[in-house]
Image 1 (spheres, helix red, strand yellow):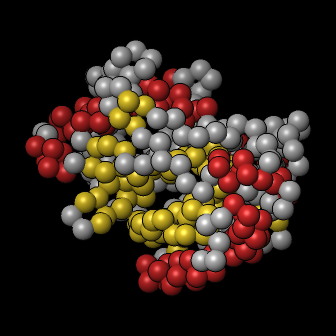
Image 2: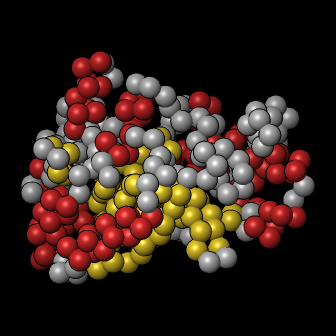
Length: 306
C-alpha cells in the first residue's frame, strides 16, 4: 500500500478498529426481525454508529439480502475433527468501546432501543483490558500484531485492492469474532513449564521458546511462517460471566484468508498436529462480518446500494 493509498484507506475506515484497545468494551449481536425491514434497519444503524466508539460489522446473510457483492465475504467455516470449531453466523455485530462499563451499558440500551423495531438483540457481553493487554491465563495477547503503517495495510481494503470491486469498499475491513471459554480447572493443574510450552512463550518475559513443541500455539499461528504471510490485526479482550471466563477473539484484516490459514493449522488439517490451546480452551462461537467504511461521521453503505 503506497502512502497515498494508506491515507485514503485510513480516512474512510472505522477508526475504532485501528485504535488501541479501550479499557472496557461491550459486544452486541442482533438478528433482523423481517427481511423487508432491512433497508431501514441499515439506515438507522448507519446513523447511530460513528465507527469510533461504536464499531459495526454486518453478517453474510444481511449482505446477501441487499444483493450486493462484497468480494471475499463468506460464512465462518465449521470444523468437526479432533477438535470442534463452531460456526454461529449472525446478522449484525457491534463493538462498543469506552472507559466506563456503566457508560457502555447505557449506550447499549440506547442502541438496542433505537434498533428495536427492526432488529432483535441476541447477545451482550462485557469485556475489559486485563493487566495491560494479557489474556486471563496471564500471557500477553497480540504480541505479533502489526505496527505503524502496517496496521492499515493489514486491516483495511486499500484503493489498489478495490480497483475491480464495487464502489464504497475502500477503508472497509473483514472481522473475525470468536468467543473462547477457558477451562481454568484444567489450566490450574498444569505446571508452569507445561503452560509455557502450550503457549510457546515464557509468561515471565514473553520470550518465545525455541524448544516449544510443534503443538505450541505460537508455532501453530506464527504469521510470518505462512506463505503468503498470514497477518491479522488482533483486537481481543477478556470476558467474565459468573464463574466462567475467557477471551473474545476479535481480528481484522483485508480478507479472511490469513485467519483461515491459521485456523486450519490450529485444528491440525495441514499436518495432523492440533494446537495445544484446545487442551484448556474451546471456542463457543464463530462468525464473520464486513465492517463498512465511514463517511461524514456515519457508516457508508453505498456498496450495499443504501
